[in-house]
Length: 139
Image 1 (cartoon, rainbow, N blue to C red):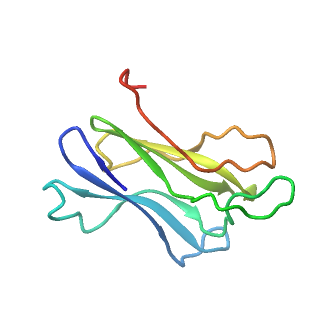
Image 2 (cartoon, rainbow, N blue to C red; image 1 turned 180 degrees about the vertical axis):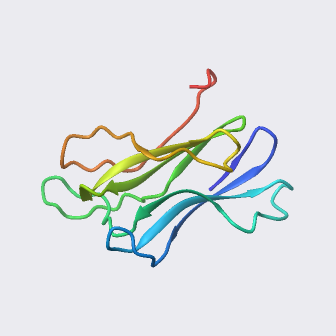
């Protein structure tokens, strides 16, 4: 997924999986690569938005507990040089329940705020398929 900053810089949104231990399991990350020359070259190292537990199994049917296909891809929105990110993850207290987390960058995706949970589903109910946008009023 490519997003364009106000100055024309391109951001390539990545979701990667690794094998490092995190809370007893594998991890992944939501990150961005940057290009300041219209995509001819890209930063050699991604800016990490957040790591996540790759052991989270994804969203589940609340009645049967069966997994559902939710996509699981992060979403990013741009407002000038500000970038907003939302993605599916879990929290250590409930590692099998999906939550939507959020982080923002005020410097074009170079650094990111600490992730926070923004979903408000009832206890035990998954939140999934994050979508984020910025309107003309910059909100």
